[in-house]
Image (tube, rainbow, N blue to C red; front, side):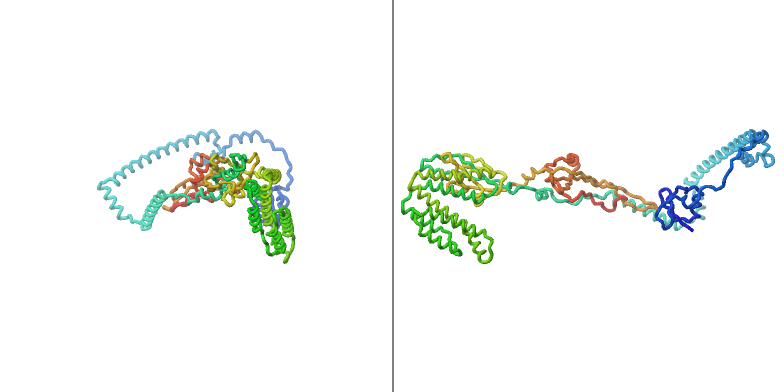
Length: 564
């Protein structure tokens, strides 16, 4: 026998046998369009593909036979089946005579009989109700009143009424359950919903997330003036502008600019130096020779040192060229890609080259002193030549270095807000002071012999000042709590419950622009209503809040539990 699964009213039924399906078809539950699937098949198809619906008999329609007048008259005088049944039930006719009564007679007889029955029922109801009320009043007076009759009734009842032990036990258990539930209800009412566990202080979290440029963490103040330079210039009747300008560079000066500043100081020192005699120049020559940077690992060092020691003042120009040539050659050797012993020599050349450059500057300073000592007009020429060459390059570099100019007052005091930390050691490469000599600009590094630099102090700016500038916007608002909590107990076979509602807590989720994460802050209801989404929350509000990893709510205290 085949079995099928049927899809009826969006429900799959079966598998059903053929007989069961035929019963469903006969009841009208299954139709020809009902989908079915034979057992073992996954395809749904109409039920008509497997069962036959409708009769296969062929019927022929014939016209109805017309009734005669006698049949029509007999049909009009025939009693309704319900009326005929009522006449027989009430005894108003028997089986032999019931068909002899006309419909009108039957209706009249039934109406009168039913009216009599209703009147009798009303009398019986009123009599029963009156008797019940009289008996109730008499029983209450005799049974509940303090009369001899009530005592006799109690004694009489006690002789045949016996207490059921199960009833007493049930009553006792019910009383205990009621007491326990009342105690549970009071405990539920007294239960305290604690605040959510404390979060982390928002101030510490905001400080940890603070994003500040390292070049803006300090405020710097100090004092500087050109008193030493003015003292030297005054001896030569040279005009020095008392106004000075101070520049702070964002980065330390590159080697080239630093050398140009040092060379300008050397030139300035040379043109402002007093006249010297031969003995003074010899002493200065010997001092310069002692500053030769010897490099024992290099054979060229010994030969060049010997030439420098035997150098005469008239040979200064030639010696400067030889030292600079050897510095260039050392730089070339240092940049060569070599291995083994040559690699060790390459390191020595790399260390020697900048020292030779510095030594060449000392020789050039000695040469300048010699020239201006022999020819006083050479002082102005030396200064002009430097300003036209390296001095102009230095001025152009300062203009393009994005240096921050700081105002210096008449007393030489200055203050810089939001800059990098400056100490005397680092200030020499980041601070430039400019002055005007005969309308020519002089660039002097911090700590120069021509400047009086003092009291340079870097003070770290409190982080709170930067925090006040950050903008945290509300990105989400959340309210937790307000849950229905119950304490359940069973009394007399029924479940009773005492209900409480957990308190609500408000949270704001804030973040800065381009932040990949956010902070969840607990706030009071007033703060929650005050700030809308996308609105900035000031730091003075954020600082006193608590940070949570997610919105939380109060733990449910015993004996309460979350309602299902």
